[in-house]
Length: 200
Image (cartoon, rainbow, N blue to C red; front, side, top):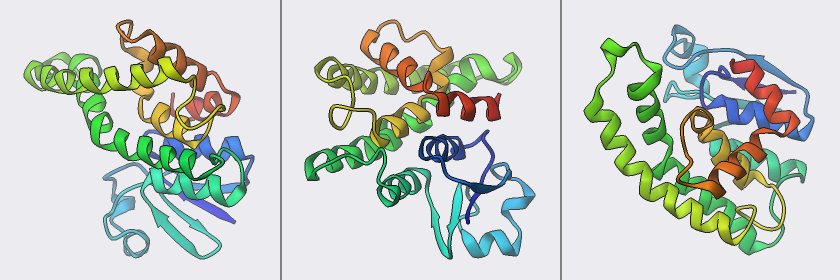
């Protein structure tokens, strides 16, 4: 039995979306990031980094949400790109997102809208936005050339990047029409809606 450790209010959201796409049965340990549940000896034995998500899959333990999703898609033969080139594109976009947008969009959203106004830092929001703009420009170029990131269909590449851009659903991304259309198309999928409902 697959067991997922991590709240939908964390990067585990993308893994919960993935298992929904794959139609997998799973157990869910709804533990929040940086909560006491991530500091127990049992959890630290699974992930000494004390981070979520982590999965246990018939004795196999794996951390890091992008790797988890690539593994699950490949294992179950669904949403994993066909061919070495499209496989490499899925890796490329997943790794690119963690470097170029993951932290930046969280920081921007928090300091422009999510946190109470007294706790926001306008300088942090601006710095994050200044990093996001060129990254979203790159994603826009890619999505004007192809409707999906790794082949002719929706794959784990799209799921990984779109899930990390969850906060983009509530931001004005009108400057990037291809990104906006693609992001909503990804999140309009039934499994994405179910995962989002777990968070909201």
